[in-house]
Length: 130
Image 1 (tube, rainbow, N blue to C red):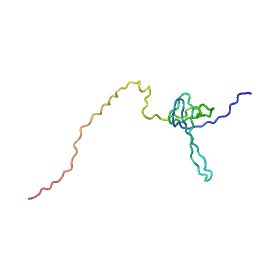
Image 2 (cartoon, rainbow, N blue to C red):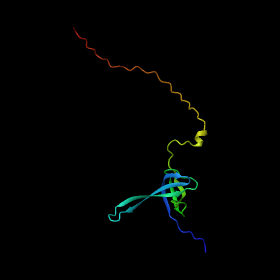
Image 3 (cartoon, rainbow, N blue to C red):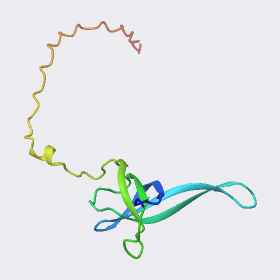
Image 4 (tube, one colour):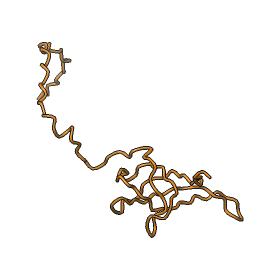
């Protein structure tokens, strides 16, 4: 008999918390109709996920897979990071830090042409006769 592995659930969600070493919280949302009124309701579920390599960051879009219990709350593991969230807050990368800063030279301003005097309209001044 071959080792047959059960099919496991795969979900896509967003990292909402980086709670500790190798642990993240992922929120995935879904829509379900109301039992009586059949209006579509938005729901969300937060699951604790095992991140072996500490690869995920806050607000990343990730794919997770159901797995055996790893701890008291963790029943999911990180498969891959689908989309990285933009970095906010000025985190400095090593490449940017090592490059020397070179002052940019100002381009020479084009020679200005002498201004031609514009003709001003003549203003008639009425003299008071006393």
